[in-house]
Amino acid sequence: MRIVLTGFRGTGKTECGRLLAKLTGLPFFDTDTLIEQESGHTIHEIFTELGEEAFRERERRVIANLPSSPCVVSTGGGSVMDPQNVAFLRRGSTLFLLEADEQTIEKRISHSTRPALTSLPLRQEIHTLLESRGPYYLSASDYCVDTSARSENEVCLAIRRIVSEGTAHPGAARRATEFLAGSGIPAGEAEEFARLTDPAAGDPTLRIYAIMGNPATQSKSPGLFNRLFSYYGLNACYTRLQDPDSSKILRLARDLDVRGLSVTIPFKHEVMNHLASIDCHAEAIGAVNTIVRCGNRNHGFNTDWIGVQGPLSNRKGEKAVVLGAGGAAAAAVYALLSLDMETTVLNRTVETAQELAERFGCSYGPLSAFDGIKPTIVINATSLGMSPDARSPLRKDQLSSSMTVFDLVYTPPETPLLRMARNSGCTVIHGTEMFVRQAAAQFCRFTGIEAPLSLVRSVMPP
Image (cartoon, rainbow, N blue to C red; front, side, top):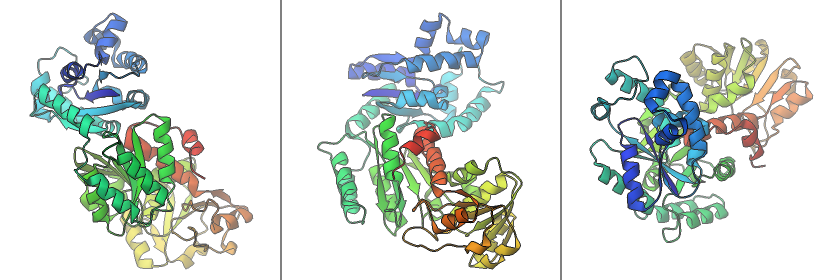
């Protein structure tokens, strides 16, 4: 196994990498040193004479040529902002993010000869760069280790302990196996989870991901993500955590030290009360569909809106109707407004539609108001049409060939609404397209790797 250390300047990755290599008997590779050896110039010379992009180009080449055999690698924090680098660094590896508070970093690098990356004073530069790099660090790493109050030896011992024992609480794997077996998910998935997490035979550094929902049995996420993990050589597995009590799921996720959670109905709003941070998109939408855990902290994101925006990105300024007023509808409205569309929310319960519409400053009404709007874009954000429910939120006579109908339901792929829309000459967008795009964005949040949409489509379970 390769052990990769990354982090901001002053977090101790190079010194800890050297010591860890000695303790483990593995060869050590520092990407900055390799860059200097390959170019014949110091890092300082490359930055001051050729610029940062010249350095990054050399860095990408060095990372791509790192050995795949067991070793210890130290690489700069800027490297993991490039998804291509992350894919190379994470394959067959366990990646540790070394962290430290801003004051400690400033103290450690105040006398460094390496050129500044900005024109800001050192303290402000550290804060600004940590803010911008934080999401990349969070996504790319398997584990976070705080080095602020630890010596190099203590950091290395902590890393060795994680590699040999993992980070799950004692007995958590057994409790999780019992939970899965009694939750109603497919028996084969529960058995596979038990096999992979068996303390006697499993890999303690296996990173666990899951979808949390009630129900979660209909989700295609486990099959999709497990195939992506395999494709990119990641030591990870993805399962289902199904229960009506979100706090029960979150406690289990904490005890297992689950790395990432996909959040589905009915938990997208209530999980927001259990997060250390929420990104601006999820905050505006009022729903989280992605949780990333690192260092015992939960961080929330929303990728649903990306799944809606992507297929409509060339359709700006049109008139749109969103059917429904739940979490999926909020993501749809947010996506449509980002495309400057005149948006109306229609829902069976008008008060719920009003609440959502007023939050975003758009129009609202009952479902019966649809005929008077004459939209060019129609988005179904209700659960109508989701298997086994065979109903449609609209009648066939309400559809016209000038409409584009986008159904966010993806099970089954061809919903009653889409079938009627196709027969009426409408342009149709399947829910699988939304699912693929939001899943690709979620995979990047989980791993730091940008999987091409063509790849995600190709490994999508039937």
